[in-house]
Image 1 (cartoon, helix red, strand yellow):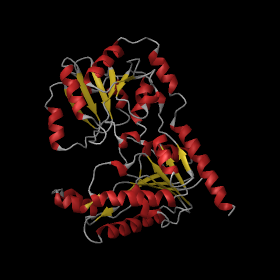
Image 2 (cartoon, one colour; image 1 turned 90 degrees about the vertical axis):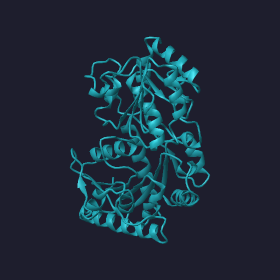
Image 3 (spheres, helix red, strand yellow; image 1 turned 135 degrees about the horizontal axis):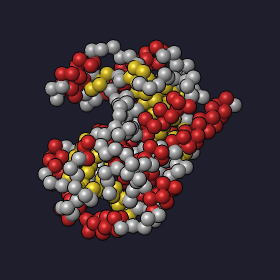
Length: 393
């Protein structure tokens, strides 16, 4: 296999998503290869506008690859973004600087003809300019469906289509995305999210030491894990459920990307707890305090494009889950409780609290083979197929 330049859309940090699982797995699987994880840029202009002086200090440091703790061959680097994209020529300038910085980091690591693995659509400008052997476009969401400015929407549509057509292979997490991308090209492969099942296996047995943040949570605890994002998270449904079940604690565990007004509305409910991010390592300890997992997701084109990571982690924990009938959760109606209204959610929670004793084991059995290692096996086969195809041209 190959060295890798991975263009990410998040930082390398304690909260793990698909990108982290796949890159960590790749680095462990191929210890003789190096992986460069290109994290979100240091946004100088935004730091100046918001008065964050530490951003200026960060931007003045050399852009160097930093080895990730616990790995000998996995590195991360953050390019510097100097100008607002909205300025005339600002976006092209930022892209040019980012490419130069990533190329410099790749030279410092002595990467040889790397595999260029791109997660965000806005990474399209890297394709063909990193000395790569092949390009993978790994699509986890359809960002062309979210509410944004007209200019941002044009960029999203144009760059998503460009990368879909230019990449040697397109990986998608859902059948919805598969059909959309197949309308543009042939080399599209369905590779859903996965799970490290043993990491969550002890949640159901309640053998883990409870996490300190769960102290004082009144039962039943209805727990949500994942990002709080206005396009994904149904805040109105959550508030209505909290008011309908005042005796319960609704624990919302994960990064909060809601605005100040939305956050204040949630925080005003006496039985809602906003914990903020919890590391992947500590997440099972938090979940062991849950009585029922919840997924009050908005039903829209954006959520239809997804394959929720929380689905796999909820099932691996063995805990019951009540969710809106979004993509992914709909595939397991015998193992999760589907609901669309506060009344139906409350009924589903009551059923979950009195469910059949064999269901936890059945949930864990359902995801036993849905591992990140299995996903890497599939991706490895795709890369070999594309590489062989290139070598025979």
